[in-house]
Amino acid sequence: MKKVGILYHPLNDSARLKAEELHNYLSATGIATWTCSAWEEKKARSLLDDTGLILSIGGDGTILRAAQVVIGTEIPITGINLGNLGFMTELKTDEINTRLAALLQGEGWLDKRTVLEAAVPAEKATGLMRTVYALNDVVLARGAIVRMVTIETTVDNEPFITYRADGLIVATATGSTGYSLSAGGPILHPHATEILMTPILPHLRRAQSLILPESTVIALTLKSANQATLSIDGHINLPVSTGETITIKRSTHTVSFLRSYPENSYYVKLEQKLK
Image (cartoon, rainbow, N blue to C red; front, side, top):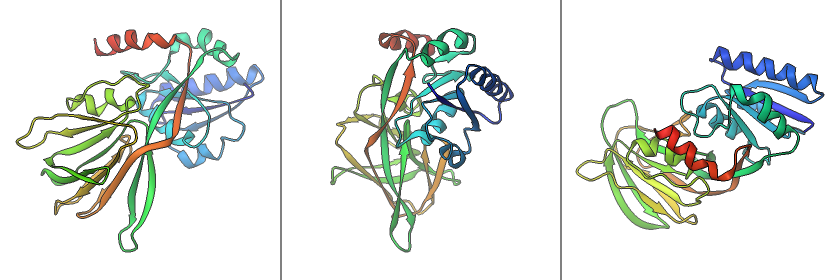
């Protein structure tokens, strides 16, 4: 490993201090190292040349930001957990000295995760679209006004359900243990490639999730008069106006994690996190 990047939660003093500590440790072993706030995506992407690994210091939220930095590259992430839950993180702070050294020496395995790709309106007047990526989920939900939204859905160009609800979650298997789980959705194995669609508090309807094949293309059209919000992995938030459509599909990109624990340890970890 010749070069390692360190992304940290900028509002967490412990994360910032741990980033400095790791920077000094890695530099002393002859590994080129850079550090950056996980919230500065553009700056972090400018530092990626020749980087072989990203260390994410914080919690799952920091990893989601790190994922935005590495999408489109083959650079894996290893998460160091300073958060409360840490479904996606790999190492605890007291494991860094032993397990990180082994990873840097070429041990470990790559855990590749599915990513969603959403086409969202960039300029309503011109019809231009922009592409955004989500490791966890794409959520279309009510905005500042506390009223349900009406979302018309199509699946592979066929009309499906029109939901009146607080919102609708489209998630990956990775995101199945996040917001979708809180909304009553099922847990998918992290290597599953299916797409999960879960309504948030639907009106006069049970909150039933739908598991769709990986090739599915989903279109969500806002039919409410009130503006809604499109949230990408919980930290990219875009306004959506009535009549606008968001198209979501599985991306050709993936996000990889460099793991030190055995592949079958997922079930033990899941039980521990869910208690």
